[in-house]
Image 1 (cartoon, rainbow over the protein chains, first blue to last red):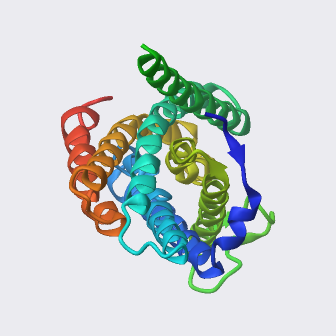
Image 2: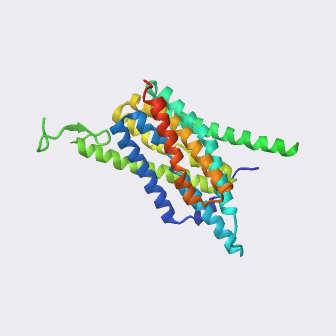
Image 3: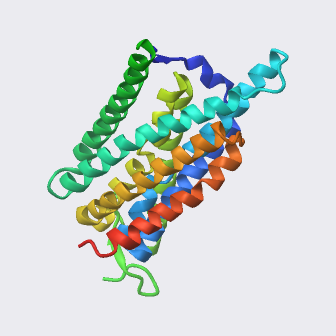
Length: 146
Length: 142
């Protein structure tokens, strides 16, 4: 399965849907900061891994797939839900990368520059996530062959 | 030296270099945090929308968007050790997120629930795992 970038998909997303994501992401960040100041960094840090992107993405994905099928004359379909479920499974794999990001920042931030550590953490997140996805994908392919 | 009436604590803004009230500085930090986090979340969400297959796009749903937006400002305001402790807690948060995603996946595939209620209901296991991890592990971890 090839990974591809479809920029025209972005045109299907309404401006209001981006506004909702913007407000939700901003609000979670502020709440995390307030909780960290009130209850300490160990508590506030939990909310840095709050699912801020997934709820809106899954909802939109299901809605767009349903609309696509409705345009083709199919009203009752599970396709939207299946796409959202696949997105959720991808997010579960991405959590391995998120943990990698956390370890890099936790261990290296006290002794190194903030910018470089956050950059290294992001690269680690991407590498671990893509590696996890590739292993999962290759395993499925191997089992299907045998 | 007091520059403002009322004897408010003064500090120098890291951005403008001008002395401002600490309450104003805190409000500015929150606004800045809000704007940066919103923008980063939109950026990762757009990447996820444009990528195929969907299981790969899902990786971007677990992007460290809030952390990237927050940790830099936290390190500036409270110091690097404070930000480092927050990152350590992210490990429990990431485990909770993993459980959340698997619960969402199962409810949508097996129980055939719709995405919106599932994404909201599954926040309960996220909270249970996150708060459980905080109570059992992080509170006593020095």
